[in-house]
Amino acid sequence: MPALTPETLRQRVRARLREQRTLIERLLRRRELVAGSLFMRWGDCGKKGCVCQTGQKHGPYYVLSRRSGGRGGFTYLDKAQATEARSLVKAHRDYKADLRQLKKVNEQLVALLRQYQEATGRRGDRRVGMPPHPRA
Ligand SMILES: [Zn+2]
Image (cartoon, rainbow, N blue to C red; front, side):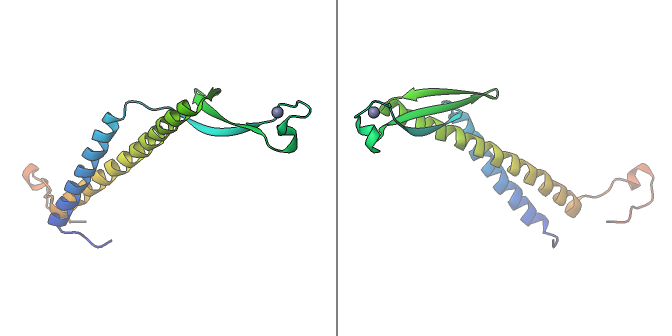
């Protein structure tokens, strides 16, 4: 990787800080979410002569599957609840994605600050009476 100029490094740090701020603001705003997934089921009631016996199954039934502490729970929802749940489930996925991105941005910031120190930093060895340190 070619060495970047201090100015380029500063610009990159500022860009990451802007992204970090945007992510944090979004994470703080996202208060309502549901950890789980939503799916549809079709049922077969087993009654003789019912339409479901000819392949036209009952449903769809909306099922919300929640993961909490490794234990799964299922809840049947009506259509309106399913619409609501769909957006809350998506909010949770987006929240997790934003957290992952924030972690990445933070790591990039640390790496950029290290590069910046390498590009601009002066060692204080001489001040404490040591011979000049060869630059890496
Ligand atoms: Zn049936």
